[in-house]
Length: 467
Image (cartoon, rainbow, N blue to C red; front, top):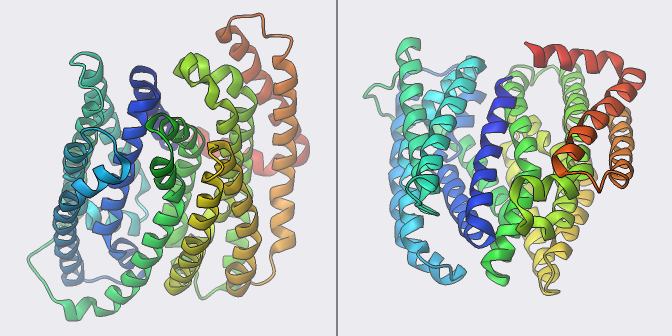
């Protein structure tokens, strides 16, 4: 339920900003999201995963990593502020320098809570993590909503929401750390964390390459196209990827510590990974297919008529997001088994290929062509990641993966076809009425097929969601 609440809150944030501010402002917000995510990644420096991956972590090591993370956060803030004028020139959006400098300040608060959150993850206390994430997100959403609706702060309302979320999350994590007895001390010894720094360095390099490969589309669209074009694409990206990212985030937090503990038991690793892929497919396939099937009605109804032209783009990006959901757990597997260097090499390869393909697609002048190019890249990277990484860690599981993925995908495609066909005779009805018919109909179709095709797995997920 916490996962669902987090997704709803984040989607509420995107919906409110998109509906009130429009495509142009949402394009500027896309740049701020990129800067904020990059700042958080750089401040962590891979040390969060280094803490979790180790079988034992002493208080001296934990304290040393805490102060290193905080120092990285301050350094990243200074660097981003220094680069703010260059960022403004590259994208050409107004007032971007001041906005970037302000949103980068949140990285200091995030860095201060990184090791506290890592210890909570290490102890598999996911209830506390979900509470910290969702409550801080709720406070940030409230601050943003008041700023944009009452005080008409425009794009700055997004900045105030980001800062409020970061501060509240740090306070909550500090309380949990105090109660759990793992508040950082004043110990500092680089010698005691030497091995963890090496692991973190590989992880940070891989995450950095993955970040630029993953955000190359938005960065290049912002450089090649207008703010409105970037805004429409950013809405499509968030509309499709936020649910998947939230699901993958929760799965990763659970699976990474588990894989770390099972890294010497290949048979249990194989069983756990295949099961994880199967459960992800059962959840994400109907979600993406349902959104694609209802997008022609849902997008203008929720975000406003000015976003209607983005419907085809959203549908293509939904396909891209689903394929990405299947490749996402690969990183969790190889990191949990100690192969941080593989992640670095893979992401460096993607960093070479993806921006080149996107640039060629962007030269056509169509954002939709860029989206289809991303789908093509994802279709190639899925089997490649299996051949070069999964197969080497847990052996030949391709037939088992196909069996677990194929059934929910088939049911989801059938649901999407039913939704698109059913929408035709309902066109004369108000959008709200159409959605009230289409959404339950899609759910009934998928669940009905699920009971026939993968009953036990579906029962397991429904029980877990109810808890």
